[in-house]
Amino acid sequence: MGLWTFSAKFRYHDQTGADFFSDLFPRAQATNFRGRDKELSPLTSTTLKLAASYQFIGGAEGWRFIKKASVNASVDILNVDYHEFKDLSTGAGFPSEPLYVLDANVFQVFVSFWY
Image (cartoon, rainbow, N blue to C red):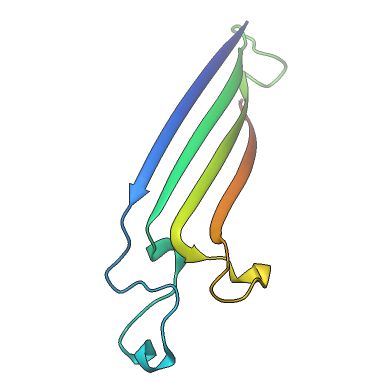
């Protein structure tokens, strides 16, 4: 006997930047405890998670030595828009660098069994 389970989750996150964050600042200010960490900048993120799980439940004797087993799979679709952090990897040059954007798809598969 098998049991399917499906789930979905949506997350919206909006944060203001830390007081000591600065994307670009003069070298003279570098000793004033400033940081250029993109996670400290203002940002907005969304995550959509889709997951499916199949669980096999055996009878009294199970399936050989396995009494129960499950297979789980999920995908997370992540988007993060940084409002003040510039993407220096483009080589566009100051001040025309675009803002940094992170798009990622995270796939997970998990198998487990009980004996």
